[in-house]
Image (cartoon, rainbow, N blue to C red; front, side, top):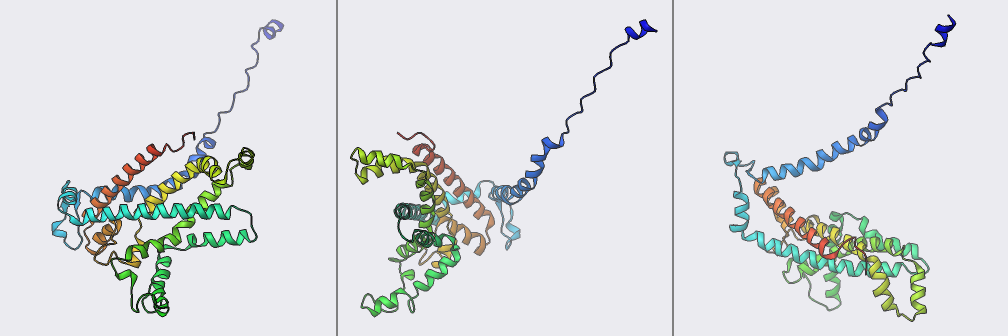
Amino acid sequence: MAQAAAVAKPAAPPRRRRASATPRRLPYLLIGPAVLLMLGFIAYPVISVFYYSLQHYNPTKPWRNGFAGFDNFVRIFTDDPVFLDTLVFSAKWVFVEVGLQLLFGLALALIVNQTFVGRGVGRALVFSPWAVSGVLTSAIWVLLYNSQTGITRYLADMGIGSYGTSWLSDTSTVFSAAVVADLWRGVPFFAILILADLQSVSKDLYEAAEVDGASRLKQFWHITLPHLKDAIILSTLLRAVWEFNNVDLLYTLTGGGPAGVTTTLPLYIANTSVDAHDFGYASALTTVAFVILLFCSIVYLRLSKFGGENK
């Protein structure tokens, strides 16, 4: 018995419990609903647009519906005189709006970054237009531009201009009037982003520059602007995309008129789909606009060297 006990095998070590797979899957389970919502509200509409761009689809003329292939795209570049005009005006609108918004936004950010009495109230007043929706902004400026009760009426009372003048119905003034209205809402966007980046600039850099005798202009050119490079590139890119797709303000202010001189490509797409019910052709126009925006964004990021080191 003693020998049997001596040669007895040692007790086996306790088995390790297998790690539960639930903790590893928990993050995917938590983000699952958000992913499904994104697929439903983003991926599905995008895929639908690409699909309908290859179709003849007009609910009011169902007998003409069917597969179109690339006919809609051929029609855009060969048989649509409106497309090129709207694309040129869209480029002009984006260039003017983004350029002016960046200029005024940078100036406002530099002003409210200074220390002065009532700075908090000043910042709130500067940023408040950004909280106003596009349609409400349009309604405000429609009232301001009203020929009977708006700005032109008070200017006429002072002897400037004539009564009954409408800047929104005159082809020579409608563009400038629309630009001013959109500036009021778009400038705070740049001011907010640039101010946030200005807060992170070390004051030691400016103090060292002052000791070396650098002027305010040189400090701005060699310290402030290089630090703001990425913020400016990102904000201009985002704003350019938004301005290109701007429909609500121009639609409410001018409706694309007078004589179609303020019709952007997205507004033309909206009119083609909503008014003409030609969803197939509108989808093809949307696809072309998407490709143009994608190409311009890639080129802009490459040329601007976004994220690169500042020299």
